[in-house]
Image (spheres, rainbow, N blue to C red):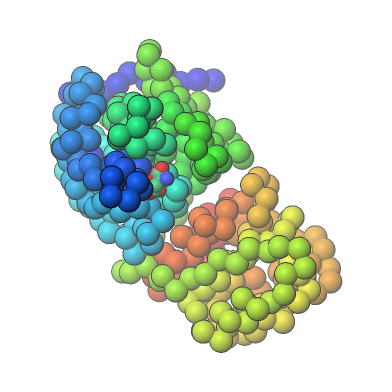
Length: 336
Ligand code: ASP
């Protein structure tokens, strides 16, 4: 059933700009696109914003999103949280690079209470490109951020007139305008000339209030017959945590069994997810690298999360002071 919600006109939205393609132009000296457009200029490029909301802006940064780690995500959440505590503010929009947008959006999903809308958007063409899609995406994001129907749906990504839940959305194509999709669930809603439409409501997530983000957390992707060099290096480095993106329902090369056992014995949490874009971890197979064997070793079940999102959750859980067992329980709540 599609719910239809009227926009709450005359409400205030806080736009927090972090950089990315939506803020980029080509540097003539290098020919490369780099962030160069501040918040005020970006808003000026989308004049119809003001038909939907009163706009306040915060220039957070001019970052290319592959440089935004969980420590920076925590700071973005702090700025957004401060804005949301202002009764006049109906919702927040964060503009962000698309390469790692899904990770920051998921961090915001875990860090903010999700009552007021938190919407992340960006662009697939830069501000100097004739196909620049920033104004359209920003206007759509503002329409969602001030829409009463967007409340209590967790953090959202709005791109190409689609609304996606932060926890399920992923960048599927390197250049397409419609690159963002949620293969597991489909979009939460859409925006069209008649309004903002929501199709379903994501369950509330357990929230985290970390004092810091543990950035010494690493992601290792399983490839056929791969040896355990990387895992042995992580063990030797005594890292904070490891996420393994396994094959199928959660299986790895037999060569990985001993280093995984050693990481767990060293109290280094190991979260297991699948490299498959949909489905969840299912511990079926025996053998040294089989998922059932890994579960018996004590890996943490990462459910249906992608490797990058499991890494965000692990980083913030460790920053909250959790240990392996409390992290295991946290992931069990996350993946209900
Ligand atoms: N290609 C990216 C974008 O579309 C650049 C970035 O993620 O910073 O925003």
